[in-house]
Image 1 (cartoon, rainbow, N blue to C red):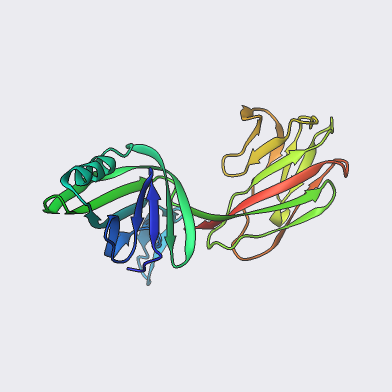
Image 2 (cartoon, rainbow, N blue to C red; image 1 turned 30 degrees about the vertical axis):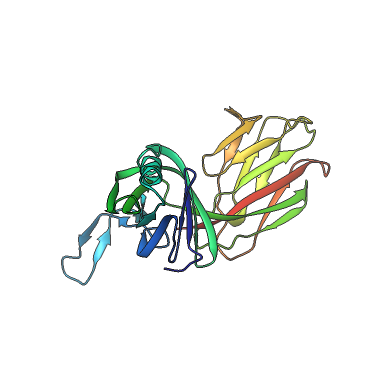
Length: 257
């Protein structure tokens, strides 16, 4: 176990390497974080040839993370506190942050995947634990890469993950005629409602929703050809059909699968 390996879940910190207090991770005690999730697909064998035919797209299943190791305490009371904190983690909605191989990534909205285990090895001093969380969205996210451009200009957008990323684009200005967002591959998103000063639009390309002040607005797109940002390659994103006083910021997380 690398000493720099660290996980934080619901206020509990799990550290790599040998430790003398709190939750430590054992060798091989991180399963499912850096690995790709399992996949699912349907296929039929080629009747008179090698291989098979894909019947649909190959997709990733949910990510399953398991952490295991030892919990070190200074007293029976403290060991009981550690046990209660582990077993009392909320069953759903937790954010998990992990640092492995020198890179910090996070995953949102985890749910409990199996009952947590906490078995006393040395009374009042040491216990062995295991914790499992499931992520319906199997992607992990790292550094945020914001790129801004004025209306009519082009933003050079990229990220350093290993999977296509869905950015959140924030637009602002004062334009009563709407605007068009242009992405890679000729994809366009036409916004038909006006931009109002002090009321920026937030467009989440993962969900296809536009919100203003946190409220989702419906019926706002003339066309909605959502796009992603490929990993490790720069692509152009622009905001057109608007004045140069309008502004766009493309927010893209390093995205991993």
